[in-house]
Amino acid sequence: METLLIFHEVDDVDHWLASPKRDEFFEAQGMGAPRAFTDPEGSNRVGLVVETPSMDTFQEALKSDDAAAAMKHDGVRPETIVTLTAG
Image 1: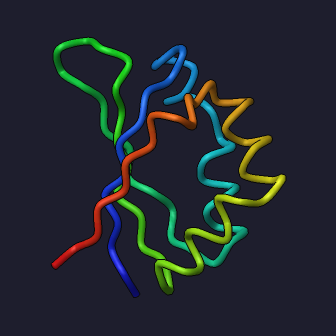
Image 2: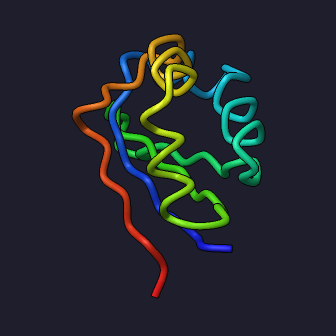
């Protein structure tokens, strides 16, 4: 498993936090449920820690229609996604 740290912006942090779509999407792709983080300064920046079988699995999943639908539902701004890998 590979650990990813993912940052991005959302339209509404409270909506994003409350949405079940994020967990549903990642788990359906064979990844663990992500840990969600918010900016203590109150910006629309959020973060996730995700366990994935591989970076390829994650990148392919992000290209899917399911990813686009989940991001749209959650108000994710796809152009702001930054992904870091552990180690």
